[in-house]
Length: 237
Image 1 (cartoon, helix red, strand yellow):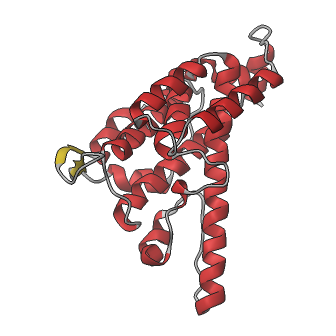
Image 2 (tube, rainbow, N blue to C red):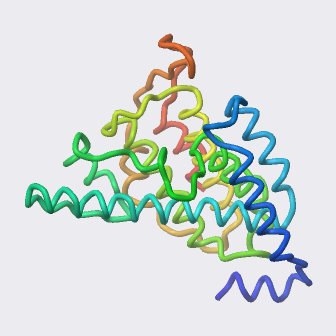
């Protein structure tokens, strides 16, 4: 594997599995929805905690775990729909949009209630920011290809949640999407052979509509986000 050859040829990387586990526990139990700190401040704090090679490993693990658990949750939901109604739903990780278009009202957006307890606007947003901010070092600690796939999966779920899953597009949700897009672009920029963009991203990149963004704690509109323009700007490398 190219990333492994680059790792072996780039000098010794000192990683500490015990330190990684301690960081993971710290991030998992000190932050999240139950903490009386605004999500932007939590993201800043967690990003600071993960500012090391071990922290980068933990950030990559958080992103991957969230994506894996979200997929498992959607598979379980699809199985439950089939058990109750006989209706078969196809869950494809490379493109969740057809699933949400077909069955959005019957589905629960999975990112707010994952077994790991990571909140999308706190620990996940911070982990995504770390992955993007340290993208040039990714090859030293992990294979960036499957990690980039997981980043795109979470981006797919995030945007489909707004459109089909009754997820409110507020400033925290918009910040997560912006970090996912920016970090994916930063990872793509350092890859020798960037993969083809997934179907969900290509679909959204063809759009040019502006979505209203609401205040996180009130109904008022405070801005907007143009996903297509943002994706074209950051992902066409």
